Amino acid sequence: MPKLSSDDKFLDVSDYGRPFARTFVSRIQYTDITPVQVTFLFGISGLIAVYCILNGLYLTAGLFLIIKSILDAADGELARVKNRPSYTGRYLDSIFDIFLNLLVFGAVWYVTDTSLLLAALAFLSVQLQGTLYNYYYVILRHNTEGGEKTSKIMENERPNAFPVESQRTVDFLYDTYNVLYIAFDKLIYYLDQDASDAPIFPKWFMTLISIYGLGFQLLIISFMLSTGLTGFIIYFFIGYNVFLLIFIGIRKAFLR
Image (cartoon, rainbow, N blue to C red; front, side, top):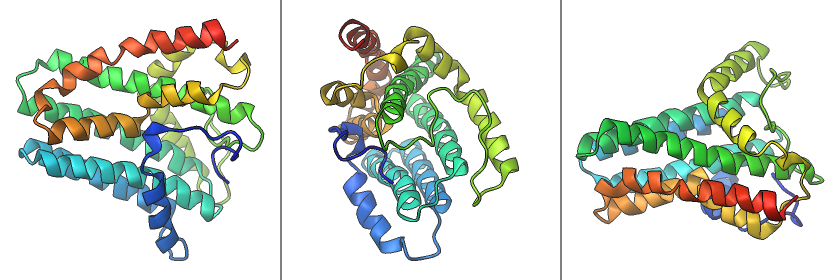
């Protein structure tokens, strides 16, 4: 099942890896490879990118960040074509993302003259931006017919495991996810508590919001790594926060 019906799909600039992910999945869907194993592959790709940044291999680092984005799309794609949704994959995906983001910004800080405080602020900014995108995207999926609903608008209770997974594993990953994300989730919810009661978000609005999707964020980092702009990455993502209040303001003023 796709995340959205064909009628509700919008141009998601953060999802550029989807065609490549589908090609990859078409080659492995009849094998024993599981979606969670693909999730581990994207984690490995992210770690290779971090290693390359630390060793000055910026072009290669950018390439592996793109590969990570493609594999990030592929794990969910594989789960859908095999009809094997799982909370294990959903939470593990997010847990890997936040740790890899931390390592990427830590590596960029290490190879530049930027202060550690600014690097930490950039990391927190990326997480907050991504949380806003995910918040609106999950609301859209819940408010449209046929939308995928494995992700919750607010992750405030442990879900019941699917038959293919362990409840103990789901509980552990849920608790870990909450520790890592609860502050970002609650802040975004506080800034726009009524978003879920709004009419279905128009496609143009979701396309605008998608510049905060992790795939597009990694694309920007890859571009800056590959074009000699590594020293500006941290400053860029702090400044990128300017759209946070703009997007929320548009939603509150025009989409209610």
